[in-house]
Amino acid sequence: MIQQINFVPGDTVRVHQKIQEIDKGKEKTRIQIFQGTVLGIRGRGVNKTFMVRKVVGDVAVERIYALFSPNIDKVELKEHSKKKVRRAKLYYLRKNR
Image: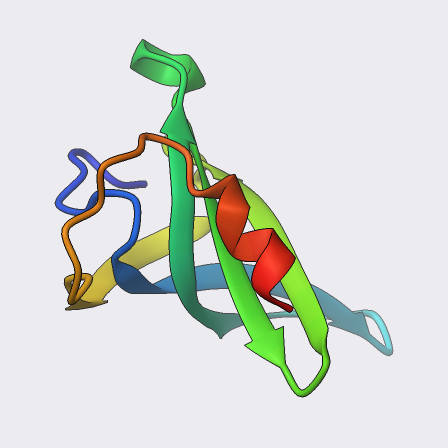
């Protein structure tokens, strides 16, 4: 669970998410890393969510994460955006690919 946000839309982040797997009756927990660009942050308080977009080849994948989810281990800030971002939601990035 994350306590505070240290990123803004346009930044590149790595989200470490806990995944539970059941294999032959045994429960295993592993960490899956999703790296992409933050498209937007919405909500307030406990309902705060953020959207991350990643492009692999010609396919784009977007995920929405709840900020206070117990399944999120940590969020690393990889890099700030190189350009100044003047929008709160970067939905225009969807049209580029």
